[in-house]
Length: 230
Ligand SMILES: *Cc1c(COP(=O)(O)O)cnc(C)c1O
Image (cartoon, rainbow, N blue to C red; front, top):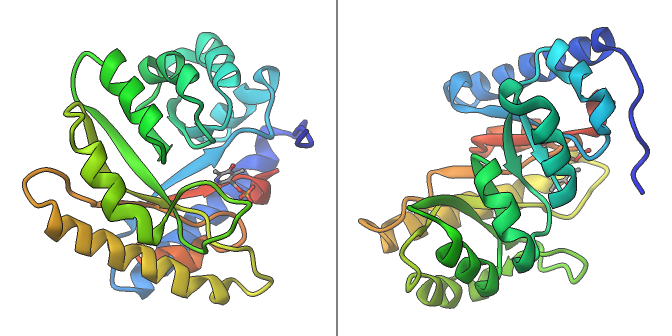
C-alpha cells in the first residue's frame, strides 16, 4: 500500500509550481515550447477525501492506477479534473475505465485492445506502453515485440494509438535515464513513419518525479509526477 498524503493545498501548490517552472526551463533549454508539455499528477498517493486539496493547489490533470479508485474519485469530483489511466489495466476493468478517462497510457495487451474495441462507441485515443528497459518487473510491450503487437492490434479499428508511454529503470542519477527516453522517442518517430495515415505516435508519456526534466529534454509531452508533490 502506498503511503497516503494528508498535507495542505499550500504545500502542494508550491511544489507543483516548482515542477511547472522546471518543466518550462527544461523545455526551453531543449528548444521546445513549454506549452507542449502537460504535467499529470499521479494520484495513487491521495485518497478520495484529500483529492480536493489538489484542485485547490491548481492541479487539473490527474492519473489513476486503479479502476476502483478512478471510479470513486470521478464520482466525487467529476469535471474538476481531467482523468487519465496510467496503471496496469486488467481487461475486465476496461469497460469501467473507458468512459471516465481522456486517455489510457498503459495499453500493452491484446486482450485490452479487444475489450476497448468491444466497449467503445467510437475511436479511443490510447498510448502503447513499452518496456523500454526490458525489465521483468515492469509491464509494457518489449521493444522487439512492438511491431508484431501493432500488426495484431491494427485489426481493431476503434483503438487509435496516439503515442508511447514508458517507465525506464530507476537510477540515482536522472541523466542515466536519458538514453531510455531517447530510445522511446526514436521508436515513436519510426512508428509514426511506418503507420502514417493510421496512427501518429505524437504523444510521449515519460518522466516521473525522479527524472521528469531529463524526459522533457528528450521530448516528453506528458510527464507523470507524484511523490515530488507529496
Ligand atoms: C506513481 C506513478 C508515477 C509517479 O511516480 P513518482 O515517482 O511518484 O513521481 C508515474 N507513473 C506511474 C505509472 C505511476 O504509477
